[in-house]
Amino acid sequence: MIGARRIAVLFLVCMVAKGLCAEYKVMHKAEDKQLKYAGAKVEEVQLIATGGVSGKGTCKRKGILWRKPDAPATVIIAHGFSCSKDDVRFLRYIFERYNVLVFDFRAHGENTERQCCTFGSDEAYDVKAAVDFIRSDPQMKKLPIISYAFSMGAVASIEAQARFGKLFDCAIWDCPFDSTEELLVRMIGNLKVTMFGHVFAVPGHSFLMKYAYNPYVQSILKMALKTVANIDASQVPTRVVPIDTVASAQKVTIPVFLITCRNDAKAPPSAVRKVYEAAMGYKRYWVTDGRHHFDSFFYNPEKYTYKVRRFIEKFLSESYKTGVQQKIYQDVEKIGSRAAHVAPAV
Image (cartoon, helix red, strand yellow):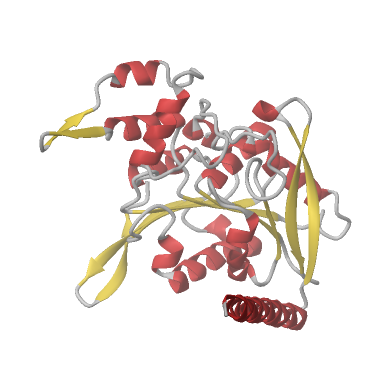
């Protein structure tokens, strides 16, 4: 009797597994048909970056390239902390006219052994490797390269543009933090404990900030990341190193579109505005009514897609050169509808 039950359970498990595999194949066949219809060719690629904190050798990263004939530009998508290329591949539909490359940052996705995440500092080498790959391709090397990145990916892309120069021709950067120092101030300042029904701030803030980059204090900072910012650094080998995104943005002269959510605790509007104000070229800044970190797209995907596409179109047509060179948009909630408020140009 028991043997019969086991056989029945095993049979059901096999049937479910078979069904899931069939569904997976159907989904990918449908995607392949859609890509074939759209004229896109999918390629698995490998990027070679330099080591950084992870070591002095090379760092090999996996990527996926959607190559489209007659594409007017190539978009490089850079993901955030604790994500991978597979998590963000859906974002390529924003850029349906263009070649699109997504890749894994070090310590993320595939091939992570002996690698370490630095929240954007060493990841700048991965960004450069992605650009080098595009520049070495006979079909794509003459096309404009557009950066689309969010959170850590945005910081890494800003760092790369400032550090190596002339990587990107245009950029859309969603919710970059202003600096690791300010990020730590926000996190450590919000550390609290509850005792006997009362909430107290955790003592030793000045000590934590003074020795924030000391290896022995890193474990406390990782706890702060998880407790306050909901960033679980225990899942990804991590080392916090000094990054000043605002200072790096001062070296950015390409057209940039910066975005963040009004309710973003990790990259609040005041922080992203510092990055916006530091950028030296044509620029736009949009504060959305998103509910949390990197929520602008999910909060209103149609509006987000339209504004991102429109920004790229203005860049490619060069019409941005004759328009207002800097502008801030803020979404405001109105009764029964959402609208956008344009702040005075600064």
